[in-house]
Length: 418
Ligand code: HAM
Image 1 (cartoon, rainbow, N blue to C red):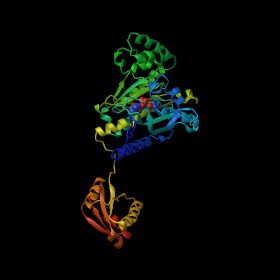
Image 2 (image 1 turned 180 degrees about the vertical axis):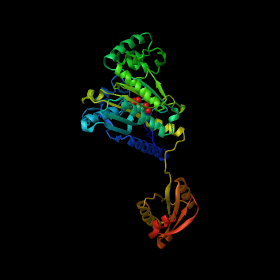
Image 3 (image 1 turned 45 degrees about the horizontal axis):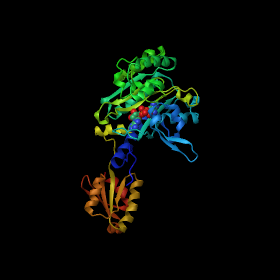
Image 4 (image 1 turned 90 degrees about the vertical axis):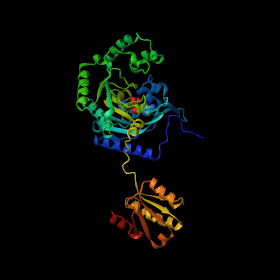
């Protein structure tokens, strides 16, 4: 038997309904903040991620699914969406004064060759949100607020915690790295971190193996410019004022190279996610558009791991599927019954009702079981007699009552019965 690739999932039936309901809900929330959806390719030039996420990041150095096309060009299945959004902004000139701020989001599969475990897959889905144009700490507050609102609307707020840090940039970052390297030289680092120390010393701070050794790590925020320090203070204060559980986390650095200012990870503090408690993560990346060949265009955003949300919602028995009933279940008993069913089906659907039909010639008992399994409100049996008389009986499974209706006045009869 051919099996699905490791770290991927088949999602169907009730779980697929929950996925759709979640996406509908998230789309509605983002519409309230005036973000519009965008669609970009699932595969992109490899270079796009090497130059944005960074060649020393785990994503680029170990986790990309690489494709070579017939002409020998190198592509990858996208490991994340920010780089694609930035490429699209540059390519479609969405940086013109009249098109900014450009507030957008995307929902779709991402691919990383990681070791699969609870909440960690090789194909997973993100909802990413990006805003291009404003370079305001209040925009950053809005970004975190959207993430927070999502958790609130999903009734997941009680165990939500937001870890924050503010990355030094420019000259200050060079200074900080010097101090950090001197500090880290006191430790016997794991093999990965020994390499990272040279290429990207910041990444050593959130190492899963060594990270908890660094108790008195030099605080990056001591190296911030006065202006950035003020911004960071406003951010912390306003988020706290909004009631969010904030943890100032000086070891938070994020695994992608493009961040330039505030960064955050929203965690859901519950066992159900195992070690993968970060559900939403993001921050500001003011240099990425220009680094990828566009103009100077500040930006910020985040991405949500949808599988992780689905796991938490399940754990909380939070079913988002609102209308899980079908209005009518028809059981077609004969050739004539099936013909009549076509007319009934179209009449009902055209008038806004949902319908499913049993074509499987099963016993009446199992057809009724099927109706119940599909959560049908009404059952209609269609056979030769109904075809000839054009009169049908509608059995209401909830009230256990029946009404007769002529096919030609079906809708009037149904509406009158309500
Ligand atoms: P990221 O931290 O790599 O950031 O991923 C964001 C979220 O995607 C994670 O917090 C997690 O919920 C989910 N995620 C990541 N990898 C996996 C996986 N293997 N399996 C399941 N879920 C996963 C980014 O991707 C940035 N593009 C976020 C961003 C947007 N920053 C600015 N704008």
